[in-house]
Image (cartoon, rainbow, N blue to C red; front, top):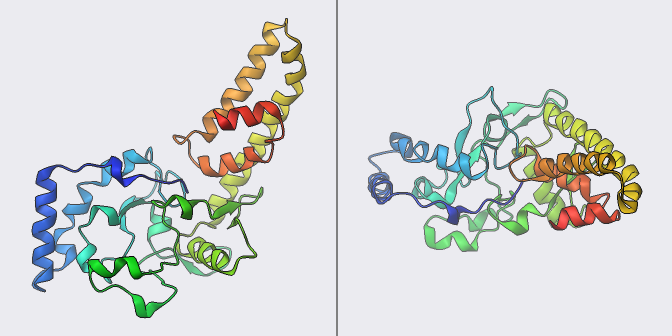
Length: 261
């Protein structure tokens, strides 16, 4: 999960007018949000472009599934937020839809779930949103994104497991975003192994690079470093996980410089 900046999206005046009209129609009770689904689907490609076609929750590219515009606050519980740009998240099927985890047999996926720490504070209008304390991590909030961590075997975990609130938020997010899907865990694990190999090969060449005088060594070192750099770039799939795995090696001077760059 990497932070996504909704301020980078600036819909046309025509779209804003359509959204306003749809919201007014739903507020009368005569129409449902689903009657105006084109409002959010019209922005699907714009949202996807913001994350380089990656799901905002798991950072994967699900080429075999229909990615969707998820409503962070479900339109079934917050119909008055169904057409709010700030409520849209680009999501893959595994994160957005309810599916069974083949390893645990538990049903995961966000669906219409939106747990709060205090359900009595659930907002019934826009003015009350600020009083809510959502449990789920929000990819549009930088502080939330930093709470999710990963193990080298590809499984997600809290960055501070001993903090009860952080542990609850991350564990619920892992379950409801289906971040622990076996295929996704395996994809991360394989990536971690590849990163480890590239970093180790580069580091073995590093002393000879410092000594200088061998352009072939310099080129080989640069190729390994560039490969690592491409995998931690935001455009790469699972780049947040890749960056976490590279951070393990930050004591190596050239790795620290790479992360700073």
